Length: 356
Image 1 (tube, rainbow, N blue to C red):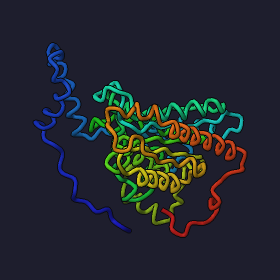
Image 2: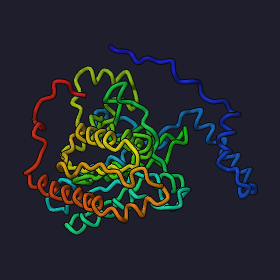
Image 3: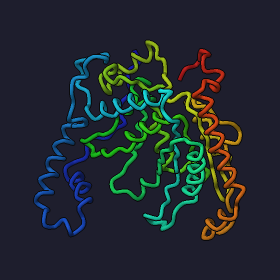
Image 4: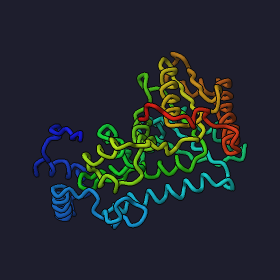
C-alpha cells in the first residue's frame, strides 16, 4: 500500500490570530453597537474551527452508496441530486437544446473598472445568434466574482494528485464551515455545465494566460474528469483508502463528455493563440467535441491601440463580430448533430492504455 506523505501543513492558528482575522470583516463602525454579539459569534466560530466542523449537518447515505451508514453532508447531497436531475434533463431528447455561455472577464461596470468588458459584448453577440436558432442559453458571468457580495469560487485543493477517487463529483472540499470556506459558487456552476448540450467560453488574455476567474472555475472542474461520484467509497477524505481504491483499478469517468464546445479568445498585444490552444486542449481532454475550425477563434481587438478607446475599436471591427456569430452558428449546428447522433468523438469507444 502506498502511504500518504505528510508534514507540510502548519498547526492550527492561535486564538489571537483567529481573532484578528475574524474581526477584520467587522471593521466598519456601523457594527459598533453589536460588538458584544459579534464576540459571542466569534467564540462559536473559534470552537468550530478547533473541532474541525467541516460539514456539521449530515445524514446517513442510504441505498445506492458503497457505505449506506456513512454520515454524508446534506449540502453535498443536495448538489449531487441537482446534477442527477440536470443530467436526466440534458439527455432527454424532448428538451430544447441548451448552450452555456461563459463570460470569463473579471471586468464589469459594477466594480473598480467602471465599464463593461468587451468580453461581455461578444457573449451577447453569440447569445443573440443562438436564441435566433431557437436554442436556450444560460449566461455564466464570472465577473460577478468581483462585484457580488460574498460570492466565491474557492481554489482547488488538488485532491486528485493524492488519488483520483479522493476527488469527488461534485466537489466535496467545500463548503468547509470550520474554515469559513462557504458560499461556493461551483455548486451552481456544476449544474449549469451538466444541463448544457454545449458550452461557449469567451475570454480575454491576461498576462499570456487565462483570466484568474476562469482558471478558478477550470481547476474546480477537475472532478468532472475522472471524479468519484460516491464519497462513501473513500470514507469522505480518507487519503489512504482513496489510494487503495485507485490502485485496485479506477475507470476515470468523464462526467461531461459528449457536449459540444466553442471558444473565443481575444487580446490586444499577445497570447491569444496560447490561451486558445490551452482551452481547447482542456476541453478535448474532458471529452467535449469541438464544433469545427470556425468555433475555435482567437483574435486581436485593437492591436497595440489605446485601452481607453478599445470599445470604439470593437464597434468598428465588424469582421470579428461576424466571426463570433460564426462560433455560435457552428456550435448550434454541432448541438443539432450531437443530439441526432450524427456527431461524436471518433475515438470515444477506444480503450485508453494510459487512463488518467
